[in-house]
Each structure stands twice: as structure tokens, then as C-alpha cells.
Length: 193
Image (tube, rainbow, N blue to C red; front, side):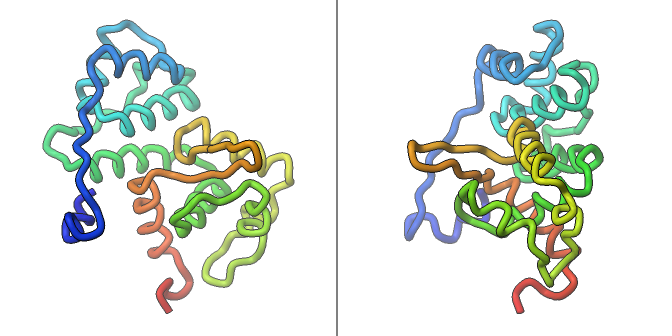
């Protein structure tokens, strides 16, 4: 997360994360529903630089929209890109497949830096928001709203965490930043004032 570099040593520290091994990458993709020959999965894992978040997102994309068929992997020239841009390109591919309610939900969801408890979702997302148009969420029946949340979890765009007392949702900072930038572009008025 390059935007944290100015704070390194002051209020943040660097924890170097290794990319997945070839075996772990293929195991992750298969666990998330991707089908195909090991060689095809290896090629995709290699193309996506064994980056865990990228592989999780691309696996959710393939599993949900193409029945897990590895042949439908979006071809994104990755090698020379920073991690942020890699994730942004995968999320752009998602943007072509998500429906309006899912896109609006992700745009609003990105505003929150912390988890959102399940019992607060309707109160936050299903009320008019003056800054932009969220009618796609307001008009969604309750059952369909819950199905949408489950779908976004299955895609890997949001994560569900559970404790004995509550269920809450969060997302990865790179995903949050991508949708926040899109929210800023669509807002009816500036978000900072």
C-alpha cells in the first residue's frame, strides 16, 4: 500500500507478504470454484503474479459469471503494473458484470473504514442518501438485498466476519479505494464538504 509510505516507522510498519506458491495458488483457485487443467490454472496464477487478492477476485469472477471456466479469464497485461493497478483492472472487469444495485452498494460500502454490522446494513444502505442516487438499493426487496450481500461475499468483493454475538462485513483497502474513487466521480456534490 504505497500511500502509507510517508507514515512508515511513525504509525505504521511494513510486513512483507510473500506471493503464493504455485501449488497454493492452484489450490486457492480450485477451492474458489475455478475449473480447468492444472497447466491452465498455473498460467493464470503466473499471469496474475501469484498475488492472493488478485487470484481471489479473479476466481470469484470466473466462478460466478462463467461457471468456473478458466478459459474466460480476462487477459490483463500485469507484469509491469503495481499491485493497486492490477486489482483495479480486475475490478473494472467486475464492473461490467455487476448489476446497478451491486455497484451502488459497493460505492457506499467503500466510505466505511471499519466493519459494518449486519443489523446496520438496511439502515445505512436502504435510506435516501442526498449525495447520490441509491434508488437501486432502496427499491430492492429485502430478500433480494440479502441475496446481493451473499453474492458480493461469494465474489470476494466484501468479507463476512462472525463472532458469537454479531456478523459484520468489511472489504480489502484496495477494493475500498477503487470504489471510493468511482463514488467521488459520481457524487452529486463533493464528498468532503
